[in-house]
Length: 268
Image (tube, rainbow, N blue to C red; front, side):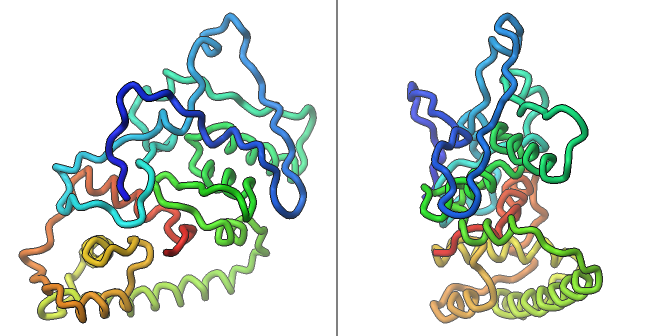
């Protein structure tokens, strides 16, 4: 369910970064030793940045299809690379304490984890919060507002041995699979099944969005199988020339959120 409005006068809720539950398995995460600013400094007088501070709403009048987004529970949030200029100047974000001396690789990794947990604007903040809660922890939502899948996040967090040949082969196979799926989706969605040419890499994402809203299935779960179901249920096929238009800035922002980290979301 989309939550596109904020209740006026509601109390400012605490952020998810203040997680106190230990992990449910494996080694317990170390407690963060955050460096506090001087009591008389400008930083101390600023409010601490929380996840609700980062929330915003899309301008739905600018979207080609303003229907609610299936599977989205929370409002989207800015991260440090996509927020409005000057936004962070209004808030205080604690920094983890940097150990003295030359840091080992594990220390650097732990420092990065602590930084991600303390700063809700960090792109990997949601993943570290989710992982720290453990398998039985409460739901965690990504910056697009979708629930993360702890098992997927756990696999993503595990170190992987670097193998260039295997990586290249995996990428080639993924591209071939994506091309096959893309062509199949064009055949099912468009009247003549014609591929849209050079714009195809964008068109597929908006096909998924259209079908997602018709079927009520989250965007990240839409593929050829769901388009077969869409066709069986009698939804009208589209003429490419009438249906497609270049996305505007607001649509590009929304689609960037939809795509980011989609493979780590929970399926329903």
